[in-house]
Image (tube, rainbow, N blue to C red; front, side, top):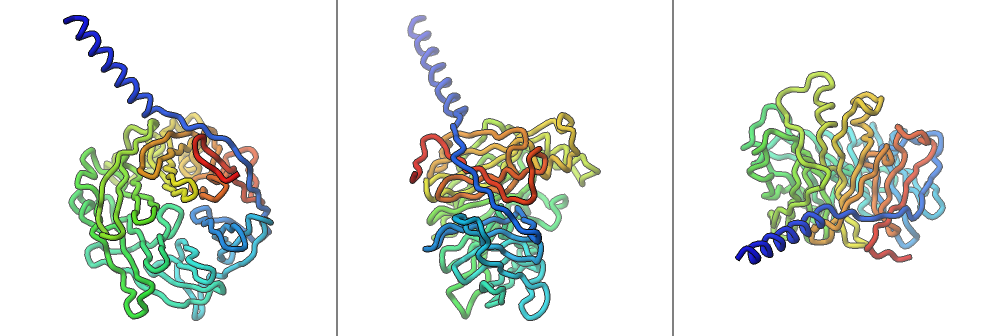
Length: 385
């Protein structure tokens, strides 16, 4: 009997060890190359929005230029700007306060504006149409198509995110879990382009451990939208066909255990310091070439060890991690970039791999005269060359 019990205990330990090993898996990567683009004098990149796209003539990068402002279309083949799309702030084509864009085709741009409006522009910056975004159940005071929550577009239907509340410090859990997150606009219907809201909500237990940030990022894959909350290990899978939640899937990083709890209005730098101490998730990118996802995250740090102000570290965190998830959102592994290797939010997926910006101002080799990306490839994924 004792021998039998010992065998059971041993098998149990082996099983636990295997599970722990899978959770602690490290995905190995290599730097495949570097993309470096010299910028001209009147160029200042807004890292909040960078979009990669392909046409019959090659690969391109659309970048928001804060000087102008304008959207620069840069060829990745010869590293030169091929088009400069002006964004007008006055006159008949003015668009208000802009907050990101989406290149929908070779002659159409979807632009997020505040007051909440979706503009459709041509490549000369002319306004072709516009649609106001309203929600009688929750005041919409913010519209975005940045790297965090870009417009998702399938050729006819636009999906947009509404992640924020007017005052996070005053709402309760019921209000947080009963506000709708996603609106759609059928751009193919010229007679009715009113925004429709999907019955998609945050989990009912969103604040069971205390009030936390409700920010999220997202990506899509075919018929599904994947929502990645900043302060929840779970990913939510939304069906585009039904417009409803399909399932929540746990995708916990080994480097994040808990999150900052909001205990009141921020005072001085304390909220920033609390955020630095606790980790949280960041961008979610879909890699259609390898059929995987990349979930970025920031690791909690002791800010006093870095010789920089809390705000400098918040703007450019020294440690940025990335999880690699398969098409079913199972964790393949993760890697941690340390010592200010990457620039926050400035990543995109291309045919050649995952492009991560190394233009972190806290690096000794920072150079504002270049857009600079490392091209990262991960072991076990298939690449064309």
